[in-house]
Length: 117
Image 1 (cartoon, one colour):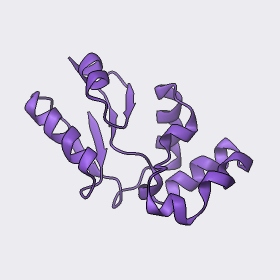
Image 2 (cartoon, one colour):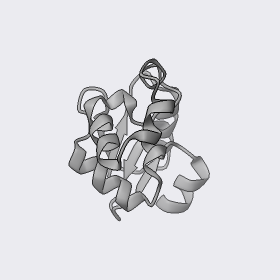
Image 3 (cartoon, rainbow, N blue to C red):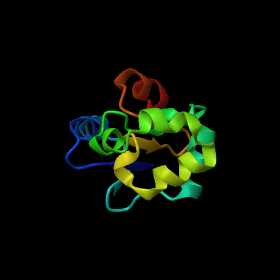
Image 4 (cartoon, one colour):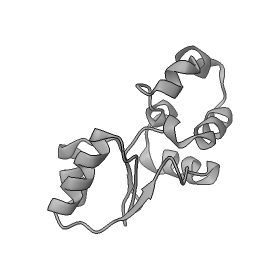
C-alpha cells in the first residue's frame, strides 16, 4: 500500500497511527517532497470514483492564496490535474492506494475500517 502524507498534517499523523495500530503495512511517501505525477493523479481519480474536486486541499493556504475556489470551475480536468501535479500541498491528504488498487482520499476512520479490514 502507498500512503501519501504531509508530516505537519494532524490528519495524516492520525491516519498513520491508525494504520500502525491496525498492523497494516504501507510505504510512506511525503506528498510535499515527492509530489504525485499527472499520470498517478489521473489514475487515482479514475479508480477512486470521486469528483476531481475532492482531490484538492481546499483548506490549504496555497489553495486559498491562488483563489482556486473561483478558478477551478473554468478549468478542464486536464488543467486541474496539471495544477495538482505542480505542488503536492494542493492535494488533499492523506491518500492511501490499497493493494486492491482502491484509492482513499482523506482520513475517515469508518471508511478505512470498512475497506481495509
